[in-house]
Amino acid sequence: MLPDLLSFTMVVIALALIFDFINGFHDAANAISTIVATKVLKPWQAVCWSAFFNFIAFFFISTGVAKTVGSGLIDLSFVTTEVIAAGLVAGIAWNLITWWWGMPASSSHTLVGALAGAACGHVLMTTDVNPIGIYYGAAWGKLLAFIFIAPAVGFFLGFIIMRGTRWLQYKYRRRPWNKFYKGAQLASCALLSFNHGGNDAQKTAGVIATAMVAGGYMSQDNFHVPDWALFSAYVAIALGTLMGGWRIVKTLGYKLTKLRPVHGFSAEMGAAGSIALATGLHLPISTTLTTTGAIVGVGAARGQDRVTWSVFRRVMLVWAVTLPTSFAMGLVLIIASVLVGRMV
Image (cartoon, rainbow, N blue to C red; front, side, top):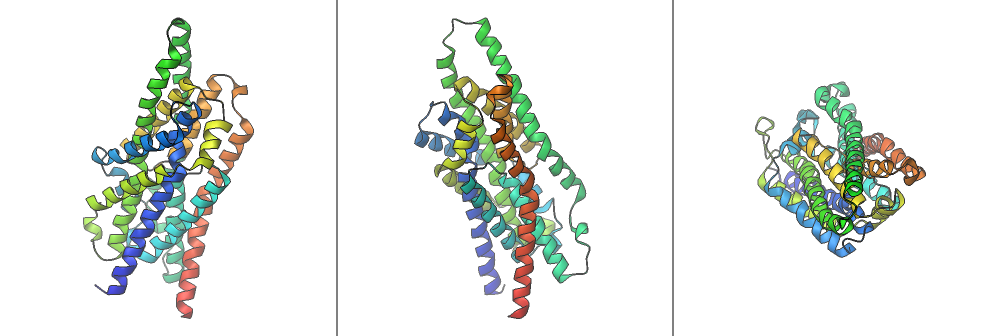
């Protein structure tokens, strides 16, 4: 194996873990925004609680999502280490941009879109193959469907759970419900963090396995996700979660709707249920938008005027442009890389 290929493969793996780390602090708001907004935990307690459950998903969740991202979306014959590097750089850039804006964008759609764009650019610049043919249509169909389904399921579950809790509070008015939901929210936050780690960390592990194939360290026919790649991905996302991502916490926890412990519990349970469904189907989904949908569902269950719809519209705008923007960024980066390589 050529030393330069080995070293570049290591660079790509490092980029994947950097993306995962940024994913952690970018998407930490998914799990901690409600529990911080309701003052059940202090911010530093919330990130430690969430990071712990992000990580322990490593011991319980299968590698279905990792295999989908790593080998189930794009024909690996057309994926090189340069393609993966361009996709990761584009994904990192878009995550940082949306974090700076304080907007909850999907790290999953960012990663998948950027890698797809980079692969498309590589095929256009180096082969005569129609780039449409490098994508697995059935897998993309399910992925694109769940872009819409997962937030809708989060909204529906958040709405239904909120209505159910309101009924219980009305029926048993003398119970100390606020104290109960403060304790219950610890469990719901843990469940949401567990499912967030179980879905999002796998995406990075899948990309690392793809880099191993592209670098010649694994055959395409023997594609698998090494344990060390999974472990590294879970560690990286947990460390990123410890960093907080407070800009997005403010948007989800304070600006969309006002939250008390019962509302935080309902939103977290709704989001966790939707994410668990997608993970069970081996699909990478937007945990961010699913959580947003659940929070809005909780707000809507209390009355339409309880949701700040102007903030919701801005979130939806970022959601709509994330996949095409990251695709374009990956495409431009790989084309620029090929052109520079030809001039050198």
